[in-house]
Amino acid sequence: MDLMGQMRYSFQKIVRYWKNRKFRKKVVLEKKMRYLFDAQEKTESVPSLFTLFREKKRFYYFNTLTNIIEANRYRFRLSFIFIGTFLIAASIYVLGFSPYFRISPSMVIIERIDSISNINIAYRSIDDIYSSSIFSIDTDSIRDKLIALQKNIKDVTISRLFPNGLKIIIESYKPQFFVRFPYLDKTYVLTSNGILISQKANDANLSTLDLVDASFSEMSFIDYKEGVSSQYMPFILRSRDFFKTVFPSVNISKFTYFKAEREIHIALESGLIILMRVANDVDNQIASLKIYNENNKDIINSWDIYYIDMRIPGKIFVCQDKNLCKNNLKRIYGEYYK
Image (cartoon, rainbow, N blue to C red):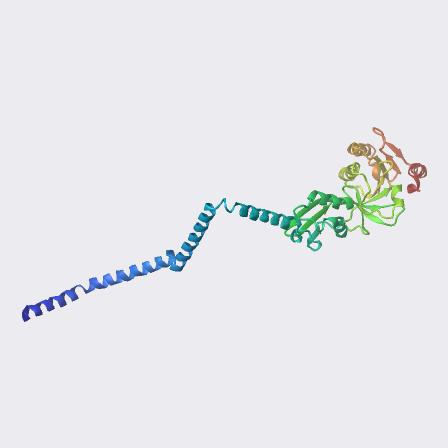
């Protein structure tokens, strides 16, 4: 190629270079964007070589071990039996006999919802469960032991606190009466299931109940004992509640329960005493009293009579003479009406 040809070729190259410079810049930018996308995709989805090597090596070892065990399963049979027996025996020992899962006194928590249940008595009643396995604990047996010493307990909730603890929540029947004994200085509350619990003050403003029972005068410890049979306690509660419903304006001074006679006497602030039998017809007795009171011009609030006797079904007896009435009550109920 002569000199003129070389010059012409060089000039054409320069022209093409400047002519296509915008295209080249666009191509460079597209390449940069593609490389950036590839780098991000590689970072997010492609694991490192070390990770691939580790996973591959782990799979290789596992697969090799599986193949060895499969090929020699008859040869290793006794070894498998020995290892399996050892694991089962170790599990039984740890779960059933080791101290790790045995109830610890410091891990037993007893809480009460009410204020009348005794936490100390509750702890003493379950002393024999300590050092027992948490898996062999009989919740029904624990519940029976708690109720045996505190018959006022209504509900017991028991939760296992692994590895060696228990949480016990006790709830008592609600107190219904503030109880006094005619010949004792102590005062109690009577729960809705008829259990007596010592309490000095009538903090809950409960209705007052005098409990006349000769057997209690010979006892030095009455707490958590049955004051009124659960068979008759609902009738006493019904007589109180229904009487207050039927006679909302009448003020009650106190109730008296004569256990031997199975009678409830309601003393009003007007001085009138209403004698009722404790039976399932208590509503009928109070309803009859209401009719009698309406037919006799509100005789309950008249201050003219001493007592009204509702004990005989279908009959109502009224006593007006104070001395005669008091002697009648004294002859039947002893020194309580002295």
